[in-house]
Image (cartoon, rainbow, N blue to C red; front, side, top):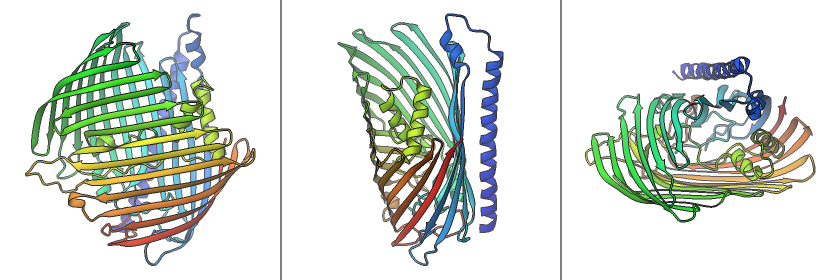
Length: 544
């Protein structure tokens, strides 16, 4: 059975990559046709004519060899091996009158020279398309993603050079929306979101990631001057396709009275109705709350909402601040959601490119040029694409999610420092007679720190540490996992388009999760155990 699973999962990975490639070709051909049939622009619209040809393709390939003394993160009988990781990628940026396409198509191909584990392909896709169907009225957004995630958040998590505890999730979404400015002070918006997710890998992972999420949201707002009004309505529906799964639906209507004295701070008093259907429960309650939106400068924004809802107190606080050298992003929230609705959503500030882009906004005004500069900095400094975040745990019902994340980016001509701290608590929302087959009750906390220092014009040294802990609660009490990784490395610019990297990494894993089977047929560590792994990696990145 394990052999069949490996063969099927390999074909699934190739099939997913083929689907992603086809999607790219469809999007690009649509953009090309749009340029071919575009009518000549009037002299009063030079900007649109200029952006009509703003298509850029950035192919690249990364080849890495990793030698490790414990390829399976096993506490006993550690096996050494050399793994080659080949990652071809294609960045796509297309902008024109009425549409924008951005994203990356890539795949990690892992080959184990010592045949310790099965070779695998992991697609890594992130594509987003934005289009304006009717000028200043009708819009259509779409996203396609394929990524790897942990099959078991309580199990050991590898560093990318192993198939251990890795599964694949594909997600596609489409979102038509209507937006209109009725007057300088009045606007409305209607949006409908539809997302499909599919898991590939072990049976449990495939089942838990097969879901459909639908959402509708509407807003009507009269901007305060000094008094204003905001009416909103939201509906979110989640359907899991596994046996024993539960459909979950949330409905919320709000009316907010707004006030501002200087447009810098906007206060709000909120009243509404909050409803939820999950498992065998149907609940409804009055919603009350307050809000504050404070923007003391174009570079700083604080947005706060605190409400009394059917599941208790809820809040959402977001903070963003940028300067030419520093970018800060933070979020603190307590809300009700589902596992499937959070799939594919990156925590604010976790994207390193976004942090760099914020710091460069005042220096480079053109978005396309700034994006190119960000990619160049990341390649030359050997920076990671994302920072560590909490791992979502599956349950087929409603979940109360509480926690926060704060991210920091600091950049000078010689240094780039990144830091992220996070904490999250998940609790299944259940009635007194409900039985949850798979529970998400847990606490998580973690951090990641990275330092990149330019030694010469072409040589950069870097170091980093990442630490995470998952602690089970409720039905998961007694399940714990701790992962800590230290890394030091260097990046050498061989040519304007080629960089070479080398790094040493040490990983320590402590887990008492029950035993299990990885995608490649190897077994997870059972009971209380420690596992260490040391690795040396060398690689080359070439951008065509």
